Image (cartoon, rainbow, N blue to C red):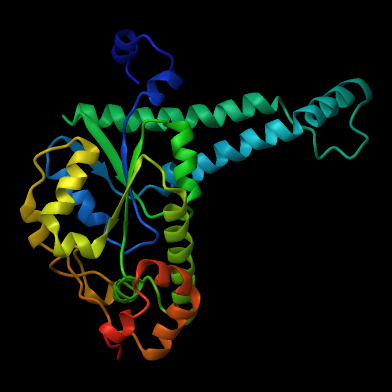
Length: 293
């Protein structure tokens, strides 16, 4: 944070971050449509939704959460071990010999806060009053952790037919085996159910197919939820789903790579691993509606 900003707001670092209102675009896995939502939001000129950053969205909040829990659980034994070491020396089993665990937790918390400030200040320096990040979920707990750290944050969760997700992931070379497919299906199911069961009030849930069938209705939902007007509807007419490059690398000269066909065995793997979420979302008949190779 710049000194000018601090002088203006006259609040502490944690208060500054807790007043932020970033918009996080999330999905149960990769290839569910978060880039489309990112592009729609960015077309307003009022926000910059940055690309994936699992360190900020997932790993750093997890470290903060873990350090806090470790401090709450072990602060007594940690303190006792330090006292024993200082009074008796180190001839004992000293795995619990830590420095002050609260200060350790606060160091990680400060690192997260400073990273959030970097995002906000960088967006503002580039002329955008709002900022966000798109990133698939590794776990729905990512939402809980971010809500604790940035209480005013909002989330757009978009999910898509798992079979189309798998076709896209296969074309992008994210999945190359049945084991990869199984892991993708498990992640998709766990996070779809996790978000739907939680019913958070700061999460807007979008069905990707509804975006395609009723784009105006869904775009207006996004505008109401975010408070950002002026989404460019023409974004919906263009397909961008990969980096520009060679097809053999899962890229495309045009920025769009068509989905790959799934074999019947691959479809069976998806059904076996995600039957509960497929039923709840109405996608259980997807292979019959869109035959596999």
